[in-house]
Image 1 (cartoon, one colour):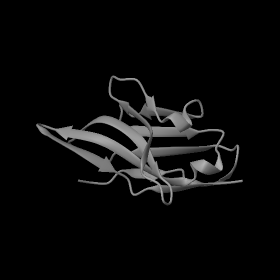
Image 2 (cartoon, rainbow, N blue to C red):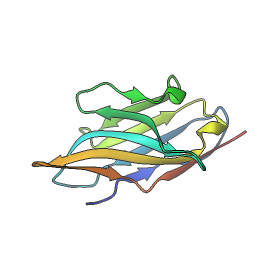
Image 3 (cartoon, one colour):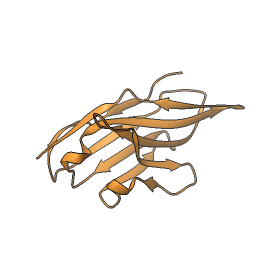
Length: 119
């Protein structure tokens, strides 16, 4: 079971933008959904955005209107366009995917990419 591969994190000034990307590795598994979670120091992991194959995107309340999730590559790559970034967006962002093969299901996770928004 391979990890997801994330990219796009970095340091940005408040009001700036970043675009995260995550691609599922080659696998026999079917990707049923992908998304992003984040975790800031001393805070619980929270949903940023997710989308299930055939479904509508879901966003965390704190990012609605600022972040946009999209999928490409037949649903095997997920992007997170982050605009109007604020210092409170500073966190480690983790890519997530729901995968299935046959009767089995699993969650895949990236190792995280740091997003830091300076004030």
